[in-house]
Amino acid sequence: MGLFGLFGGKKLEAEKRPVSAVSKSIEKIIQNSDKAIADMQNADVAFEEDGDLAKRIAVYEKYLLSKPEWNSFNFSMTLAKMYVKAGRNNDAWSHLNQMYIWSIDPSAVGGDASKVRYEQFKILKTEKKYEDAIMMLVSSYVLNAYSVRDMYFNKEKFIKDAKTIFKSLGFSDLDLLSFADALEKDIQTKRIKEETVKNFCTEFFRKI
Image (tube, rainbow, N blue to C red):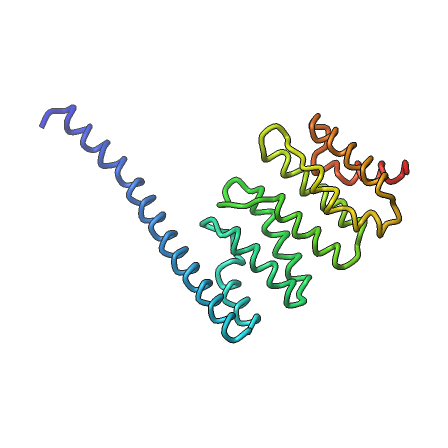
């Protein structure tokens, strides 16, 4: 074997090792995710038969409380909703906060920060924490705008989501429309970001 062939062969062999390790790692993740999905789906079926929500939650918790290696976002969102259904709002809130951290972590798999904030908005609304709820709702729409093309803002849906809260806070439909118009303008110009949502809401409510 010539000198070129000898060293070339060694180089190729060295390059194959990490590829093989990565392949085995991916294969393991796939196997783990397949088992997790199967177990959770079986738990869903069992719940339809026995109505034991605590047992269903326990199965989901087994797989969803650590940083995800596969795209388990929808299952995690189901777990958060089950917590709420079980009257465990604090657990739901804690899990959603963890999901939010994962959603903005580039090393985590899957996630949608906008949907996490929207679910937190719903919890705050049911707890009648209206000022916090409107800020969380705005955060959800702002995050969504930055994740889609052309900073899209669904103003009609936002008004529908916020209507009950504005009424509970003593504001009129005209106030809500003005708020939505101002939010739309700031979203389209990229003036507002999640970290400035509180200031946006506080300043608007101070004026009216």
